[in-house]
Image 1: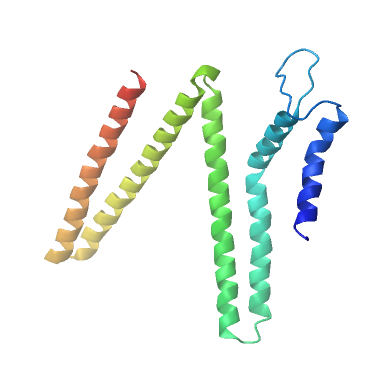
Image 2: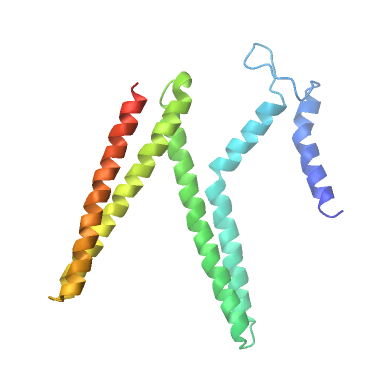
Length: 193
């Protein structure tokens, strides 16, 4: 019953603008002159605002859970279990903030790229942007692997087994670079068909 009342109040608040305009909430009339927005436009607007402000909500929730974790640590009474729970709460709160910020940046980037093309090619633009973003992330990861293997060669100091592991990593990185570049060529060829 406790969960039903807030959910029903939220639903009534969503339906209130449509009822105030004296139109059926499921009527969609688009951008016709004299046509007022219906229920679908209100939901779309609310979802757009939620997505735009997603990182702010992630920051607020992250700060709340950092405070909860800090309170668990302070009020632990020297209990190792409570201190560990508090540390885990803080760690997961910070991870959640970073994931929320990354998701918000990714959504805004894809939206910006998709809106820069015509509306007829929206799906193709979103897919191309997503594929390009994933390939760029792979390239960054590839660069990290090359740096790691190079550092491993430097730290090996002549140990043949360590040098062999680093050399093997560089060979696999080169194979990965070839695959990544071929994937981009193939996706560009398919996109231009």
